[in-house]
Length: 289
Image (cartoon, rainbow, N blue to C red; front, side, top):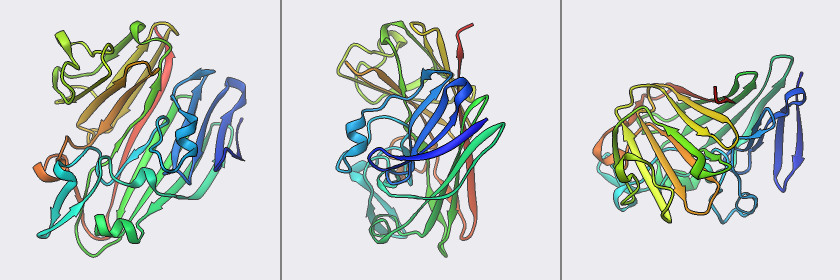
């Protein structure tokens, strides 16, 4: 049986849980509707630095931040729409906006929570569109499903590209395997891929992959005998790896577009007034067979 409850930690937090398997997620609407914690079968899946969750002046380091209306960064933090320049910081603004809960359900087979983020006066200055971003998180016996529905509530075509920034906890990076279904990559930080292998032995490593041959990436944590799989809809054409030395996480990030996507016109989704774009990613864990 799945259940849900709320607590203050320090913000209102929704806990969706399956007690029999010690599987749960925690969701914080006030902090960008983030899934701050994910545990499956007693294994910690997401990494979290609690102090960054509590301090609104900081971007949250951990959980699964939502990257919208852009998933990467823009040259000079600038893009143009209908001849006018607009500024957007890296990863957009959704992760810093409060959301509201639309529905929470729990039953024998699953639990789910649906939340919404919408525009405000500040976002309209940087992204001149009225929108609804509805996030649905479903927890069941297979793992976690993340569904995003972006609705254009404006009267003009809206460009965007979505992404996620999940921080996956690892017990030891030196006993870690990464399976990314592509050999086509670009180092966003030099020396991130010496001899074709992701580099955990420098202060920061960052690589973006394209031309994916499969929708599924895997992280093999041999120290825990745990395989974590991330499966994305085809619209997520890019996978980003990011890690910091001395931190027990690896980010495996599904993105719809590459760096500077709005300006190079790659991966940009355009939805007409009144239309909705829906996409899904799934996160699962299992013993390494």
